[in-house]
Length: 285
Length: 309
Image (tube, rainbow over all chains, first blue to last red; front, side):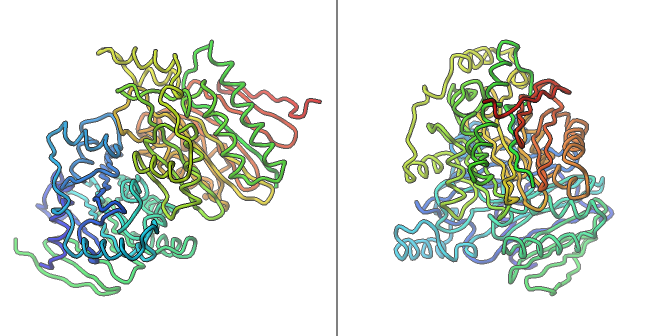
């Protein structure tokens, strides 16, 4: 198996799929995407890790999200707890950490969440652009991961999780935890998880836009392509999206140079990194 | 092109003794916004002015008068969006400032980000020289009374919230055809610390696109998020629906799919506008040409000359 699948799994995205039935007749589709550059999480201007995540259940439209939560290993699990254990959809900052603590999720040291590479990059940029709040090229120094799935009963779900962009301002919230931007799931249309330049994804509410095209009769691939194209034309942003329809059609589409993705369907693993390249591997039963 | 400003002061059930203040508040805010447009200001200037005025008015759940979280503190959310560039700015769970909508605009204008939250938003406010205000200055006797009442173990804050949702918002089209929206709120009564509702989430609390129109929403935040109400209404307009029909379709869908009530103000690029709600009441007002329009209950639509000399 390609190692990027493990990378994303390590980050906890798989927890979103725990509740989904594993295939007996191959109706399940799982997709992961994520950028390979940088570490698992990026450091903000204060050298801290602030994480955003969202999860959504297409059957009820219930959703849970956390933004700017500090130093926890699996933000997506916390997002799920927000969905399942509170009357709210989104918790932020200290409130999100307090909720994590109240349900027994422990905080972990910053070093466990960032790679040595990220630490070095952050130091370099910090020294180089002292006083400059944002990194010119920061849109590429991020690592968002996501998953969408449809189970045998036709229930769709999505999850997206991110450490944001390097040297982001303290408290910056990107697209990932925002419903309709970082992800959306609806049993009637499908599920989407997005990655790319966060502010651009927000401007066009990319996940919801893709699903509106599907609603209008477009295929999952065409809907993704049209929406990413629109994001490029209208706000000059690049990104990627993974999509599943309730009937199990799926697509992994991107306008960035690369996007690591993988999908499992009918005991076949599909994966890719470069545009128009799709590899296949038979999984043993 | 007919410039217009439409504002709302929240969907819900407004107690009778407070309804007059709500109506006069939204009328005054709509007039203030329209004055900006008449003076050659942009739609963005107009919605920020209208919403700032409502934030400063203690009758509404935004800025001064915000509901309190479970700890008895004020945490506020706001968003602005510019329909020309699709640029937007938002703040969530921000404390100790008088006008979150103005901070949201600064996020849009002065950073490359679209949303800042909690302590980070406060740090940014300080860096921008936004004056800090005390928690006390944002809290009214009414909001403290409602907070205490809902601390009781048998209290139902969600039901009680329908007594005064009070989120405020505005949409506007200026003479150049630029469209903007702004929404601001203290959130939900007795919410958990750090709870973020629909208001600062783009496509939920508001959305503006010069090609389609703009929407500002109010109501049950979690329901609005589940259906991304603002974006949903604009999708209907993209499919050819009128501002009124699109708003009603969006609200009806929210009610049938997730059982949520709310209200919206909507404009299209031609200056057509609507103020629609599925809740019992929504204080709203609009100014276009020389006429002030306003209402509170479903079906109510009063008009008045906006230039009484």
